[in-house]
Length: 382
Image (cartoon, rainbow, N blue to C red):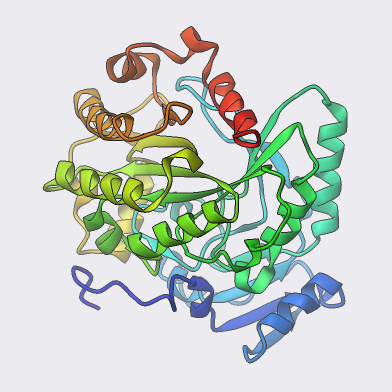
């Protein structure tokens, strides 16, 4: 493949079309939800595995990732579904709660941090959703006064295989009457079919990761195009959903100012600004071993070869001066177009960076969690 010029087709922004086979653990096979998924996946070969086992890898990791992303494993989650975002105290966190629906993704972003986290290459999806929903109910009941912002996009893309799973419909309908919470579904796909016609009651925010056109074309393989993502976002706004966008990771590259300005201009040309609840910015950061993995899988990609320092979270980051330059440019472009109620913020950055970019630290406004809680609470009333 000519990595520099080819961006693989995803069937109209639906990366589930890339899946070639399905494995099902034996104790999951008779679950009604498993059968729903297999019905939607009609035509794909299905293999039944002993419980608590993985399909054999096609080779050593990380080379096996390419085929692993084409192999869907339906399994049970025996651990916790619902837990805080794995942040670090040295940088400002938004107190996000992660709902773990599976691991891995059929898309293939060069910078994806999961490449350095995964202990098996397969695309896994958890089918014991009754346990998932029960765990959420229990958490809500234990802290009835708390406001929860929940996302499913930490260890997988929220919507990449939704054509097969239909999980978005289940979660949106479950959250519709939960006044103490907002669900965020974050994606790089254009898969929104199951969101149509739902009485979401403003409790679900649909979000897209965005980047400069160069980064999206060269570093985000098998993803929906910018046009597809923004068309999907505009459709969701028409269905009454509030939206969010995440410029993360922001990557330094030739003509980056022009590229990010173009993306932001297109965003506000295609999507009503009143529908946007929040927009995040996060400069590239990664576990040091990710560079070697990405270099071996994507030898023509060059952005890992810039200068980095080791941050307080033991992740490689751009030098502070460059991070501030990146953030200031995007913030200026966003602020002059965004609606007054839209929260624009930095993800996992220090107070010093915040003051350089915004002129204040989050604690001076009540804390980042409070800023986003207020934005989340407002989305259902706008």
